[in-house]
Every structure is written in C-alpha cells, then in structure tokens.
Amino acid sequence: PTASTSVPAMATSAARAQLGANRVLGVTCGDDLARARRAVDHGASYVAFGRLYPSNTKPDAPPARLETLREAARSLPVPVCAIGGITPARLPAVTATGARLIAVVDGLFGADDIELAARAYLRGLGPYN
Image (cartoon, rainbow, N blue to C red; front, side, top):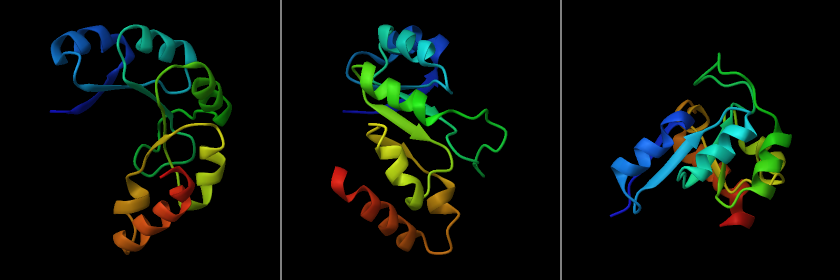
C-alpha cells in the first residue's frame, strides 16, 4: 500500500529508513533549494516550497518565491509541490513554474461552498490532469 508523510528536511534519512522504499515521503523546504537537494539525496519522493502567497493556514510562515519553485522543478528529479495561499486565480503563475503538485487547505475548507471551490481548482488544473 502507498502512504504519504511529510517531514522536515533534517529528518529525511531517518524517515525513509523507518517508512521503507514503498512509502511516499515529502519534505517541506520553505524557500531553500539547497535543503530540497539534500532531501532528494536522502530519499524524498517529492519536495514542497511555500508559503508562496499570504496564507490563512500558516500566516507566519516565511515567504517562498516562485523563482525557487521554478528552479526546483527544472533541476530536481522528483515532483515539486507548491504550498501557501494558492487560489484558482493564482494557478497559472504556479503551474507555469513547472510544479506539478499543489497543496490547498483554506482555499477549499475555508470556502463557503467546498464543492464549488474544488471545481474551480479542477478547472484551473484541467490542462495538467
């Protein structure tokens, strides 16, 4: 079975050893491409960057840049995930970086109509599905 977990970059090797090779292991890297490279070297299945935009979920998280996301997507051999304040209107800028995963919390669960919000994200991601 496939399961997923996300850990800080410094714990990647230990998490990979405990989870085994068949589990998905994501590492959050803020705006730090060097951290992402180390995480990949130590077994990360994907790396995440963010918060890219102001976020209600983690308002105090330090900002990450779209350029970091772009460089990661261009240079790393694993999928890149965008996190933080991503709305359907911001999807074109995010997907233009080459990131192929997005993480959304408040954009869905903070919406008055979750189904309507989910449909808006799906429409925005249509070219990538």
